[in-house]
Image (cartoon, rainbow, N blue to C red; front, side, top):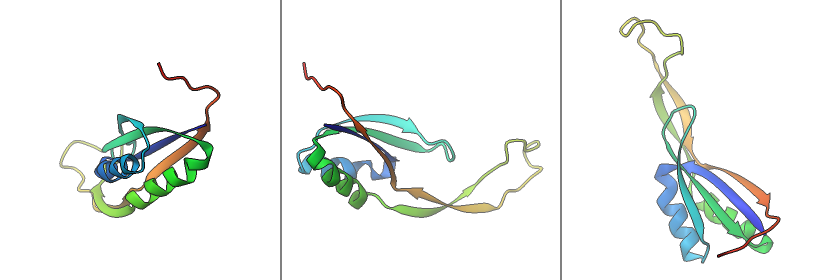
Amino acid sequence: MKLVIAVTHDRDRSKITEGLLRNGFQFTKIGSTGGFLREGNVTLLIGAEDKDVDRVLGIIGDSCKTRKQFVNVLPPDAGPVGTIIPSPVEVLVGGAITFVVDVERFERF
């Protein structure tokens, strides 16, 4: 048995969760926040048999794609407000980061 941990942008949450449910996979959803842009993320904990891991990863990959977004990024040591006008920076957002971890033991109570 494996535990798939998927961290994805909150905008992609619905597509991923609907795809997982449609294919019979159960999961636990945890709200989280991204580090760089401090935007909403969701972390999904998905238990899967070894033979189903590729299907789970396929559903995640098909449900979320990276996209470009312009953001204003202030340096951490920026002076008082109004002294610097940052130029928007193009960054990639979305997609998913996944980890597949061996599960030594699983019990349902």
